Length: 459
Ligand SMILES: *Cc1c(COP(=O)(O)O)cnc(C)c1O
Image (tube, rainbow, N blue to C red; front, top):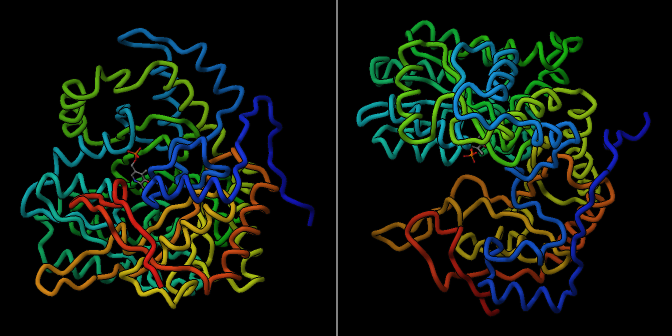
């Protein structure tokens, strides 16, 4: 087997800045040990998120120049609509400025107090939009998802038995729709199998519940299906994608992921009545239905990106990159979530630094040290982001998993960047006994991870 190479060459470059450890110590301290508060100029390799961070192709940049900025009926809208329809098969395609705008429109129409919306795992913004309207967001992923060492090939799958029990328990009339997040972002970028999509569809159909896909990483999910589900070994990813969407009644999409652009999204719906209502909300809050919250040039870039993201040399390189880093750090015994997912590597912080108690945030300790050691920005996804303090006892309630996410921007970094990342992770792991916990010096009641400040706990 030959090396799987980056299937592109580089026409425009963006310098990144090296800093010394001494400089980084000052920068991190000034940021209150919160990586969200560091200027991106002070980051060497930025793995904070894969959202909106993709590099566009020459054809996408050409689309930016040829975008039609007409208010109504722009040529760029029709190109966008036709491409989305070609891949998803949905009837009504409604552009929005990003994924959560599509969610807000959908759940503004369907979520209300007394309703339940089950999913394998809701993404934070999806959950927030459901709950903001008074509904309940329910996660019913298979139990293997919570075991970071389980090698189940489709750890994003819906637990079909629990789904059916849940529907019978609360009653189908209280469930306006069911969702599947492909791939399961909050669960480690793990895919959902075609078999599981079909089974979810069957249960939904039995009870008359519409099924929607949160399709942000549909192409990565399609590639995993091709690799891991023998029935699809010889199918191309567009055909696989079409089949995935064929079981759904609609989808929400953040184009900042698998449409390879920096901004954009859409809502797609088959039902005429629901689509009409969604367009009415769109006009009030986003814009006229042929542009949503976007410029014509953005629609061009999305249409082109949706075509490119299904190229199999791209997907092979994309998924292999994450797997490659996983293999490297596995040789040094670094604990991480296995098997590696589509868009990110997740270090298992509880196993990585077991000497740091969860209320002192082992994930934060690792994320800070990755920055100090190598200028790498990652993201704690554990007790800071999802932990709570018990109002009565004051005790820390930890989430099921304590992770540090290194999310990979699409087409941005090369293999030597990733070799470097693996080296830094291994070095931090080798010196893990020196890692120290952190405590809050400033904390807000909501989404505290964005704005909080910390200090190292003295030993
Ligand atoms: C990013 C994301 C969203 C929200 O999309 P935005 O474009 O950030 O608003 C929704 N669901 C999943 C699974 C995502 O990854």
